[in-house]
Image (tube, rainbow, N blue to C red):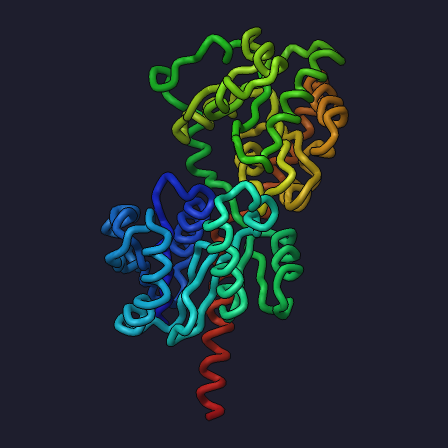
Length: 384
């Protein structure tokens, strides 16, 4: 059977987690080698995203630019059905939240989370309205919805009147090979910076409200007050504008207790992760929380929010805190910072936890969705 993979949303290096998911699923399908042909529909920006010699995957470059969401939505809903029909597609899987309706074949949509509902008031009204409409229609009209955690599945079922049987969970996984190579960088490629010679914990800098940065910074300051811990806080990514810094943040930064790395390439990021004492992940909303697994894959203990999908993903391999409580975050940071034995226990549990996740498992569960829909289609056709 021919499976179409709709990647018209893809803007390499921009779309974040959906790119990680698409790349990981394709890698899992390569390893699995299911008895299907795959036709990947790409836009102009992603024309070179896959190597030309990818066996078992045919690329079709569509005349559309994903940077124009309006243009992409119009193309998906008005023109993609003809392209799908031309290539003899038996099932179309759209990997980026939305799926065209009125297709000539069964459809699957991957809806990773409903973050536009959770904190969409911070989005431009036009974008929030567009996402609300297109995601709703995609979820309702697709034959199956794939999501990435039980938390997201419940969010989808609570938001839309659909059968629970329609929504299937397939977990993400860490890119173990990339992480293993990143854990042994050439010294001349990534010279050690001065702050890397001293103890530090690590987190990811972000201006998105769900990432909970203001509380993390306050909790870190409180942790320093409670115990005068040795570790600095290293934030991977760019700082938000210094014009918006509170006196607390300004003081932490000027004393070099908090260090922002700026943008890091993926291998550089893992080099910083592997040298850290532990990672703090304070989000109060995540559809999955892939950095938790990525930290565990390089042997990094995790101190983590108890919210959303994170307990589901971290299992028993993290120390959890209430992301709304500065006091609780601070106390858990101190507990891990001063206890090498606890950090060693978390490392061991993290490696064990990783065994629950792999891109090949993701591919197996995704292909099972395809096969079930295709089997139902044949049975329906035979009954007529």
